Image (cartoon, rainbow, N blue to C red):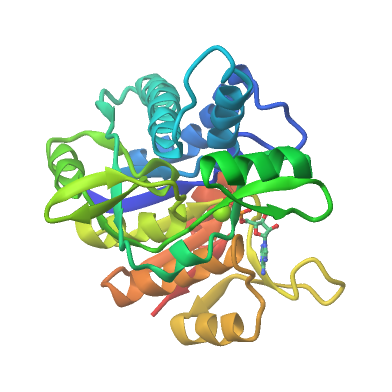
Length: 312
Ligand code: ADP
Ligand code: MG
């Protein structure tokens, strides 16, 4: 086998800000990212591709909401599974096409993936992650009463359902992903961080939660023994004082520096925070280097010319 890498694609780089998120737009963005992943494969990497699903799963939920007068409502865990199938299909097709263009005949396979979370995770008593559409206060009250939802008022834009975002503890299909890799396949898995399930006496059951894809991706990265973990997002580099006149971009960071800057508050929860913490955990779990960059910069980042590289 080649050198092992996990590439985590941001859900926001498949449905970009300013786009409607049409299927042709998503295919175009997935194709662009796939061109760069294909170049990694040319360079000898065996790759597991993971991806976020925030915008996409929000749309699936909204579609179910709007159709609920004629069709049964969908629970969040099956919406997650639907997004894994739809996005996995798209990525496996465009990545396969890019590889064949380069004369590489490799199978690209999507694994529907469940991720175990702890039923006692404190996130379950503190749902904080807003998902899906906005509601008026009357609609929201009805959802709370009839469906047992938790809701919050989201930045004066209306009321939204909030769900727990527990930490992932185990990737159920990890061995299947490893077996496919060993058989020569490029594997797409852990979509949206995996479908959240709780385990009771060996029995799995889906729960209404969302899992951070960066944390779940680093779990599979360590499990398969990847040496490289790339998080492909919409910034070229991680920065200190991000978005201020004092912004300083970082091209390399040690694990201790990353933890220090995190403690100083440079990397907010819900965006850069999980990427930096997932990098730290990846290195502690035996990984060699983590890179945070955008899709266009992947090759230059591998050459050490762009991106932010985090090492021990
Ligand atoms: P993804 O969908 O790829 O997970 P996120 O939106 O969760 O993307 O995280 C990437 C975003 O983090 C960037 O678009 C950027 O706006 C934001 N960000 C927050 N803090 C920083 C920082 N210190 N350096 C760079 N980007 C940052
Ligand atoms: Mg994110």
